[in-house]
Image (cartoon, rainbow, N blue to C red):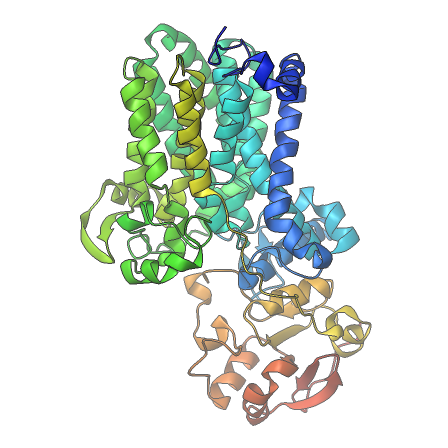
Length: 585
């Protein structure tokens, strides 16, 4: 027996006299049931995620945002509170009547994460939306890694090979880049789970009823997390299915039967989601809310590590800014030299397998699509790419191309697991070295946190009920963009906002500077007092709440518009016109 002999359940077993305690642990682990192994994998992933992202803010977990994107985190905290509150009060959560009052605004094209909001409802009710957001962000990488482990383990039946695959997806550059707080882009675990169920059905270990029930539930869940992810998953799922039909000649009939069940699941999910789907089509904007060609990743972003990766860190940030027009959005498209080299090695060593070329082709296609509709090299455009065809699909016209990198990461993860599991002979250990380097090349770097989330005491005290009437339309001027959304949620949605940060504003509501919001940043040309007065009167605004941090800049504007302060305290001032008073209630 040599040091490279293989066991049935794992890859490489060292000689007993050199393995020692480690060999005994592996022998005991090999007898564990698959469910226990899966649980162990999840706990390892979750421990890793906690160590990277939670431990740095553990003492202030309930007061500091896990990521750095405070502007978006305020919206997500509002969203986590909005859906449960709307349902509890008999309101349609798809239409936010409390924002852009008096008409309200459709959330069908906004990332308001209704599914996660309902799941986190108990946490939100007990500890507040910030804790809910942090918890969801903390579990998202581990769930993504665990779901990918299930896929890889189903294909390889090797624990550590599958564990490595899970690491490459759950802790990929895509995930690390979105840990700023973009919850709708991080809860991606349903995508590999959909693949896992399909594999189970094809191999015959899952019955049709259980498959349809599980697949339908995952489709509904994914739709409730992100309609954009649902759309891109549909496209890439179709591509993967066609690739499987091409290479899987011996199981083609089984694949077709599984495809029929997938269509049935999609039809059932569409019925369950009919109100949401109807709102998407009815409230569709006249033009894409994002310009994909402008935000396309640069070709260099595939190989230059972003700051969220330990291999790059802040040292390469100046290089990124010099080479790329949009280095922040490009970070999630990073693959790295090591991963690309591994894919090439996989193609060479496993070239006789049909699945090899299906996977390599999928990686190549996803990389091309990730680069967007226009090829950018070192910040300069160089021609049209196939991704432009996405613009023909209404629900994908505004998709950000860099986000397609998650499908590249998933395929690379599966390739790594298969490559390790198929290794034989004296050089099999070299594959483990390569994969270890790949994992190290994408290992996350914990972000620099933005600090404590500050909330004026006014909004969490009884004073708000004394100064602001129930359902009153208010214009809030905070110091930072998006704070008005969080303050409304923490005040129990007592007042309605004439304006609010919901991401891209629908064209019909984008009526200029007042609709974009007033705050200390990025408002170089504030409205005139006449514009301020006319805009607020037209929308029935009866009170203005001015944050003390923004008072020096905007107090004169509010006063010149004909309003006077009627209350000062709790970090804000409340302003009214002489002919208005706080409504009762």
